[in-house]
Length: 169
Image (cartoon, rainbow, N blue to C red):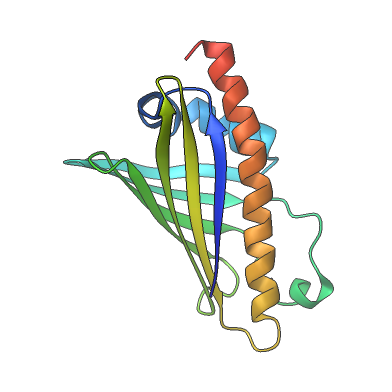
């Protein structure tokens, strides 16, 4: 299993991020489809249960660079289903990701939380865990997934800070 911490500073309060941005349908549509260039992104369900918001997403990212050793393993495409729970009390979002390909051999989990830096900024921290049980290429798959996440999170941080500035949040 490989783990990676991904951190970016956002120029708004953590409360604004969680309550006005993170679950906003228009923000997510623009982020995933326009900014990140996903083939598709859809929130299948969003349900509130007390202090928890549960969300299920289906998405298909575009991946331009994939090592030849991995291309053969991705028979069902690079789409995935993310099941996440945002806990309002702890201000943490935890998710499990099930890929279309290699679902029984690839375990992807993540947790996102905020570290306040002041009234109008915070550090968004994402901790991703990836375990690939594929003989000979497991480590390569883990690195590829985490490298892709790191690139996407860097682009999403830049986009989110533009979104915040444009809306005066």
